[in-house]
Length: 238
Image 1: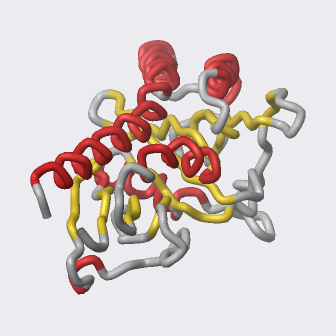
Image 2 (image 1 turned 45 degrees about the vertical axis):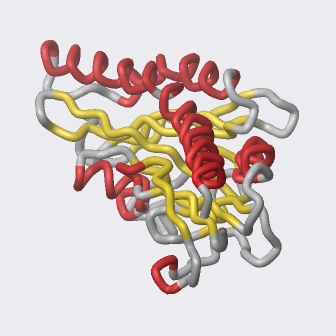
Image 3 (image 1 turned 180 degrees about the vertical axis):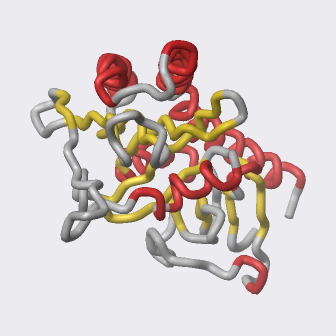
C-alpha cells in the first residue's frame, strides 16, 4: 500500500468519525436536562416523578429537527429511579408525515410481553460500564419498524447511573450520508461496529449486519473510526 492510498483511507476514517459523532453531540442537551431534573429532585424529594420528565419532550423534538435521519429521541430511566414508575421511557418519535409524537411501549414487567429495555445492549453497556454506546444495526420491531442504530449516552448524577439520553438513527440515512466517503476508497471497504458487523460499505460482497472476521481476511487494513466504541473502517484489499 502506498502512502497516498493510506492517507485516503485515514481521511475517510476521520470523515466517518465526524459523521457518527455528530449525533452524540446532539444528545448533550437531553443529558443535561435529565441531570438537572434528577439533581433538583434530590434536593427537594427522594426521587423525581415521571411527570417531571415531560419537559424534555421539546428538547427531544429539537434533536430530531437537527438531523433528518433521526426518528426517535428521549430519555430512558434506570429501574427504580422514579418515585411513581418502576420503569419508564420519556421518548418521542418522528411520524411518517414529519410530525413528532410520544412513543408508548409496555415496560411493565407484570405484562404479557414487556419491552425489557434494561437488557438491551444500548442500555446495558452505559448502565454497567458507564460509557456511551451505539446499538445495532438492528430491526426495530417495537418502535420504528425499520433498520436502526440506537445512540445512548449515560446520565450519572452524584456517582449513580440514572438512565440514558438516546436517539434512533435510520441506518439508510447513515448509508446515504457516508456514500461519498466510502466511494473515495478504491477497494472493498466497510464501516464495522464493535462486533465486527457491517454498518455500511461500498461493495456488494458484504451485507449490512454481516459479521466479518477481520483478523482472518487476507490483505485487510483497519483504521479506527470511534475508538471507545470499537468502530473501525476495514479495507479488504489495498
